[in-house]
Length: 376
Ligand SMILES: Nc1ncnc2c1ncn2[C@@H]1O[C@H](COP(=O)(O)OP(=O)(O)O)[C@@H](O)[C@H]1O
Ligand SMILES: [Mg+2]
Image 1: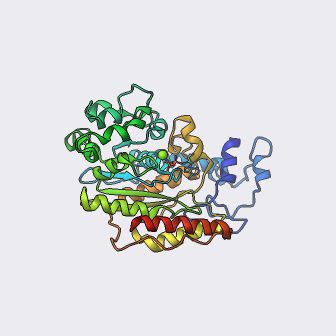
Image 2: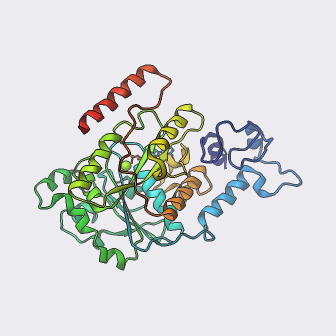
Image 3: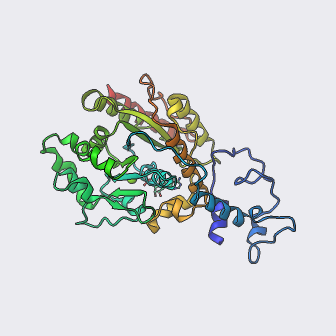
């Protein structure tokens, strides 16, 4: 109980409540509140006003939200008419690729959509969050890529949902970047493995591929296997650094290996509503990438970062938390709006948004200039 209150107080940022929210207006509900954190935590926690309902209290509201998240039946999502395959890529580490992959997958699964998560990162974090064993020796994407095992044999069902399937990654995958080099059609191994017939037989509606933080052969395999790319962008300084290189790699793969490849979704993650910088990043990204950017942003949230430690997604770990609600909204938006193509003329901005620290701004501009240089 205390943890929930903690979360409500420490969780910041939101998709619908601005930094300018007056102090007496709840960030959760947008309604006027007079309760201070001290009052909330006093004694057993709460003193209900005579006319109050359960939802007037933070805990009651959280419970009501949790129920809505776990049973979103009223708002069902249409199944796509064909299986959508989406690569979640950004060669920067720690931007929310894995977190977004598993939580979007969980959000879709709650709406009766069947999702297959392909864990393509040797760290196996997506497998962990989905509660799927991935110790060395477990049938995994490694054997599938090397052609030693069919896809179906490596698929496991997540402990969280029947609709959530996963091909795990084991540490063996760490060697795959090198082992793949000498194989025939090394860039197309994953595409070949994602057999349309098997996906259809299993009733898979979405395949989400979680990439490692590099632009090596594993990521190239993911870009060849999917028509769509989802790029998570962290609302932090350096957010756009390296994006030029990623977009140019996508263009290269599109030109030579996969003509259908396009960026269909950008998801803003770890938004901290207290900082101007976060808003600047959001504005910059929306100006440059337009409609492919989901309206829903994911706030920075303690619960989101805690969930994987318990082998959970945030939707199963704390369904009433802001992080869970945001991923549920993002999943709905992502699932409902279908495939969108980023305007091919879009290029990345010349500079990253202003930072409070001019020296770090200089550093970032240098970094970005290097990216631009590598593109030519
Ligand atoms: N919205 C969020 N709020 C707080 N922490 C987050 C959020 N999204 C991700 N994290 C944490 O940030 C770290 C990096 O996220 P991760 O999804 O693993 O990034 P990537 O897969 O791009 O390397 C993880 O520890 C994760 O728990
Ligand atoms: Mg990851």
